[in-house]
Image 1 (tube, rainbow, N blue to C red):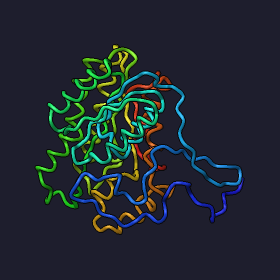
Image 2: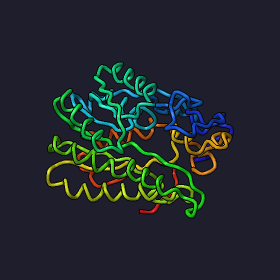
Image 3: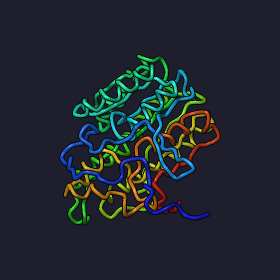
Length: 312
């Protein structure tokens, strides 16, 4: 079988013409991302090697389930929220107050799918925000079936001798300790057949010299996932993770957009697929792990990274 002609595009998703942009100094917003990320369309190829995008259609895999998604306002979290809703789930998303604009877009998409969205402003670094989120969710929906621990932050530092230890602590509180808090409070309402999905990263397996503290938190999340899965298996609660590679989300220009031109080729020269991934492409792994399709899967991490070679 011959290779496809070199003049064919590598994807139907945006990958060339990514715009210079910098959202540093904030959490990053999808509404400012150029071009927009894709949250709901899957890629299909015809026999001539031409790609097109089609809307993701749910099959009722999460019918009448409820889910909490931290960081569900934007990026991968938004895609997961919308796809879960299309599969029949009602959703609570926990997000920072400054992300209100993104959160309202996600809420609208959940409602378009015929499901209910419960928006909670708060900071996962604060134990009370985690507790209040779970309590609000259970009060509104009466049950909790799925927890997606997805909130994260990162700050670049080229040399550890220059690292801000306050930033390191903030990164660990956001990425790791929040998962302990959210999971502690969520488990009080979960039962056999329910599931937890944690967002780790390719950095957990490959490391990252610019993000030593971030990569360290993601390594911790991977082991948190595996250990918790063993602990909760006898109770019938499955615990898994997803390890994204370079995904086109606001986290990129918020932390790597200085200089802004760095965004023009992000992922293109690193991944075998020659492009950044789209949030919807990650969301499919979360759907699998949270749904009956993943009923015999626990303690595992699904890699969605465009072909980057990882170990472990």
